[in-house]
Length: 540
Image (cartoon, rainbow, N blue to C red; front, top):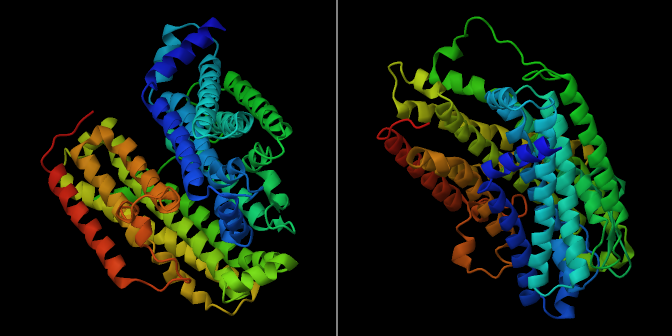
């Protein structure tokens, strides 16, 4: 046990900057949301209005979660729990994969095991211990943020525990994924995909939920039970606190972690349950060019993103009519919907579809950033030096990968649009032409281009900061787009997010000027990145 603790402390030292940034950032989001709710919805009438509106809007329920009363704490939990839980899950999965599968892939675990005589699973146990401690600290700091904003102490502690419990579950889930996947990239993709799937399933259950007669509470449908984020939501810390869902999450995490440790004890270092696929002896025609090489390196990751976008589009197309029927079937909502949504059921479907296609735009931006950041891994691990030893320029290398990143954004958005169109056609809804959903999805591509080209500029000028700044820009843009109005930020600050300039089609008309401006910004950033990388040396 002493050796496991030493390994956990060693891993914590490696993460002495990254982990505090994650924990304090998530806690700060909770504090900012609490303060904003107190400022914008300080009186009961304002809170009643926003909760009633949310109960009548399936898109709101899908994105945010379940309304559970009009108390300040309940409104705060409704506004920010799902988002903070996703961040806790991502923090946990990246932490575990970084110290397990990635260390094995890069040979660090081999060096460590050759220095310290410990059992095979000691390093994994240390990572699990670190992950549990990180989420305990996260729960505490989230609670402190809520308390500092004036929320009741018992509810704040319960809300922090709900976020931390979701993080603990994904620590265990990522540990199991790391035993199965053959590389750090595939493990990160699979583990973060589980987090996204948990959010998606929770969103489906909440969107299909049944509002109560007072329109201040919504009971989720059965799919939410399949999501750990949904289980954390069931704790209801500010209304009727219930620790059983959190205990269930901890129990599930313990079982999954025990299975992961057992597998690690029985497998060799570097081995995996899913063996790596062997490549061909000779490259095809595409493998002889920089674009072909970039495509070959990104195609498996792109496939995963496209599958996620297809699932999201299918939900948008097929579930929209069902959600509209469910909500419109509640008597107290009929009059409210007729006042808030002039187009009635058809307009309600459009709002739901537009919200999910906006999420597909987020997928496109994330996939583009991930494709660009692959360059940093190639450079840091020495493969770029071998590649650029041939007669080719660094700017061409960057340009080829930017082309694949931009193409990925287009393919992911297009996949979501096609899937939504098919789903809408299957559902039999004729209020909106099914073909219009493809351009509605593609309307988010210009915003994605800004994020991936901005990341390329950071990579070209400050490569060691490209990973934190690349993902940090995406998170910042998402927060400004989703929470900027709630936080009462000036309009010009909110407009710094490219997502703010993407039209929510088919609810809003296409904005050619906004799309052209975003595309122009992306082109300028890409040009600057190409110039900057041609004037710097490769770094380790």
